[in-house]
Length: 111
Image (cartoon, rainbow, N blue to C red; front, side, top):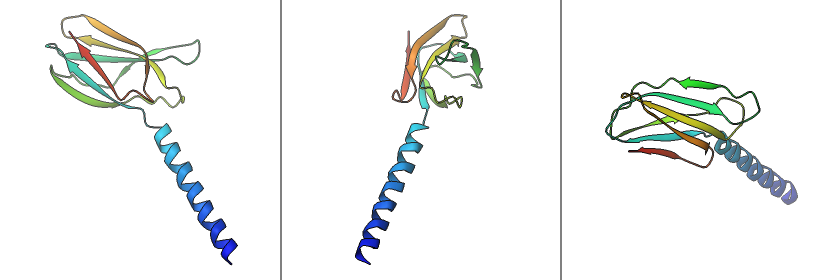
C-alpha cells in the first residue's frame, strides 16, 4: 500500500510539472510600451519561422504616447521569434527584429 501511495504522489507531481511547463510555453504575451510623444496607430507582426514569412497587422487600436498595452503574439505555430513593427501617426515606423516573445516580456519603443 505504501508503494502505491508513493507512486500516486510521484505521478501527481509529474502531472503538475507537465501542466505548469506547457502553460508557460504557450505564454506569448508582451507589453508594448510606447515611450514616445507619438501615437502608435498600427502594429505588424511577422513570424520568423519558415521561408514563407508573412507580415500581418495585429488588431491593435491606437496606443497613445507614454502608455502601454499587453498583446498576445501567438499565431499557433509554436514559434518564439517574431519581427515586430509599429507605425506612428506621423508616418514613421520602427522595427524590432528577432524579438523572442517566449522570453522577452516587453518591447519599449523610444524616440
